[in-house]
Structures are given as structure tokens and as C-alpha cells.
Image (cartoon, rainbow, N blue to C red; front, side, top):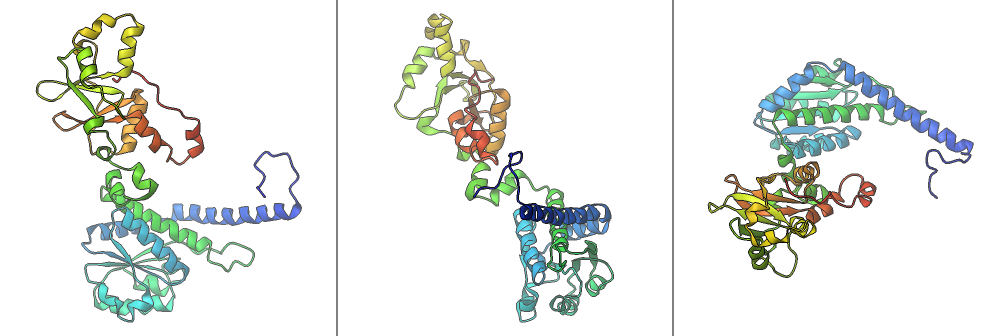
Length: 357
């Protein structure tokens, strides 16, 4: 049974109204905790960022129970945004896995209460190894905080729900602090969209972040001709069956790009009764100095450029402006369908077809 959409003209049973009120109360409770954390965060956070950024080792994240699960999430976020990280269960650490921690590493210890026995038992051997500890915990007065080098307090919060027992508000605050640390570190390292794509080669995310050179048409599917040829010569010479781009890239004697001539340009010659130009130099009717893109640029950049310039073909050139391939609008449409709002793309046909500029 589908849930009613906002604005549907129907009566909602009382028990469902109660459930909605309870759900909103939980979310509001957690939102309030995040607002509190927003205003309470201090320069200790900056100290933690600097310590990790200057380290040559790995961030070893540890915690038990819900904190341990959040620790694994923080590790995944750090690893995918340029910070080497590894999750170490404190119990396993006390039974031999502590050998993977070295003095060049940093331990990020998670415990809301700051009194988790397994985590506290790790502190003496870490001190002997001279491994600095950053604690994410509720305040600065608990045993973990007092033993840590840097404390990132998330505040003392009552948990959500009627019983106020299940970790909820505290875990939300802990996740937020971990995300903030991971993403600020990422920016501090100069981590780029290209770097992010390199860490996500698979799945829809990886496909959306492919570099242009992996998507562009080249070889038999890429039409290139000399700008000194006539329009007729170019069309006859490059006529071939199968999939092809809707444009010809024209080059100078040096091999650098001189311009572009599209199928739409050819059609326009006939529409405007200028067909006599078909036997003239294609340089007279081509678009000079067309918009181009570098092969290492990511596909979203190409899509945005084509949309902004309202063009259907985008030449890919090297640093000497020699053409390497071409992005065609029909290639881009497949990738556009993978954006966050697929329903919006169902009503989106194509970019306006016009002369490349």
C-alpha cells in the first residue's frame, strides 16, 4: 500500500498521526543536537585536522558497538576522500592486532561515554608506542578525554524516543563530527573531483566521473579533415557506414584544430540556398576556434560546457590543441540519465542543436 502524498485529500487515521508525530520528534531531537554541535565546535577541531594532515601514517579508528559501526563509516569516508584510514576493533587490538599501529599513525577513538572498557584498555599501550590519540566523545571530563591528546566533544545529549535509551542523538552527533573531520581534511589536502573519481571507478558514480578520454569518440567514429578541402570533398571522403559523430573537426597543416563543421551547418547551407558553397573551401563556412575540452577533464564538466554553450559536439584536444576525439551529444545523454533525479531526465530530450562555438 502506497503512503499518501502531501496534499492528498484524505483522512489519516489517528494511530498514523501519532507515528508521524513521534518520528518528527526524533528527527527534531537529533536536529537540535546538530545545531548545538554547530555552535560548540572549537579550535580543537583545527588541532585534529593539523595533526592528521601533518602525519605520514594512517588514521586508526577504533570503537565498540554503535561507536564501532560509526568508526567504520568514518574510515570509509576518509579513505574515499584522500585520507588513509583503517578500522581496528579494540578487542582484536588487545590480542595481537596492535602490531599494525606504529608511532607515525594516529588513533581516532570513539566513545560517547568515554568510559568504554575495551577502548580505555588500549590507551596505555598506545602511550608506550607514542601514538597520539584523538577522542570523539561527549565531554572533556571522562577517562578517554583526559587521556587523549586532542578531544572533539560532541556534547551530552539525551537519546531520542520514549525510553531515551537507544543510541540515536549521540550517534548522529558522532557521525556529523566524523564527516566534518573527513571532509575538512579532504579540502585541506587539495583533494579534487578527479582524485575522487579515481577512488570510485565502479558503479554509476564511477561512470559519471569518468574522464573525457574514456568516453570520447575516436578512430573510425571520429571525423577529421584538412581545413583547405572543400565541403564536398570532406563529405565524400569521410562518408562511411555505422555510427559517426555529427561533426567534422578541421585541422591546420600543423595538425592543430582550425574549426568544426557540423551536419547542421551543412543542412543550413541548403536551407539558406547557399549550396554553391559546397564546392568552396570548408574553412569559409566552418566555426573557427570552437569550444574544446582537455582529455583528462571529467564527464560532468563536458556536460556542463555543452549545456552552457548550447552545442552538440565538443572536440577533445591535447595541450598543443591537436584533436584527439569528440564528445557527441548522444554520448552524453546516456550519462545524464544517471544523475540524482532520474524523473527529471525522462522529460529532458537533448541540448539545443546548434553550431559549435
